[in-house]
Amino acid sequence: QVQLVESGGGLVQPGGSLRLSCAASGFIFSNYAMSWYRQAPGKERELVTTITVGGSTSYVDSVKGRFTISRDNSKNTVYLQMNSLKPEDTAVYYCYAYRFPTTSWGQGTQVTVSS
Picture: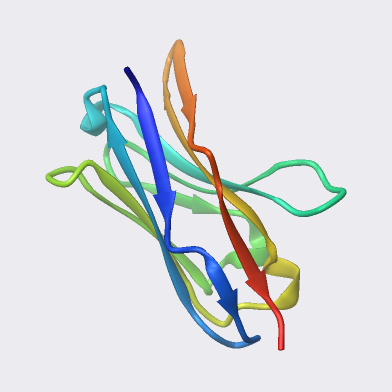
């Protein structure tokens, strides 16, 4: 059974940092592209960043230079390092696994950026 479990969310002040983790199980992790999405209240879910099987990364413009995605295939885990956080980064962050035609979502972890 495919399972993605996010952790690491919380409350942080503007300018602070958080590292999210997504632990995967039930599938061959190294064969899947992994992404982080986020959904703010009243807004649609948006793609934040992706890391491919080969390790290539891409980011939405609003987080470039502040967020870093990485993966550890030995631990079946993908990470999202978030620095210089802004109030507009407040959202539920979701982990997403993709290998055509299979996709899977985590349950989400709340990130709140507020003073």
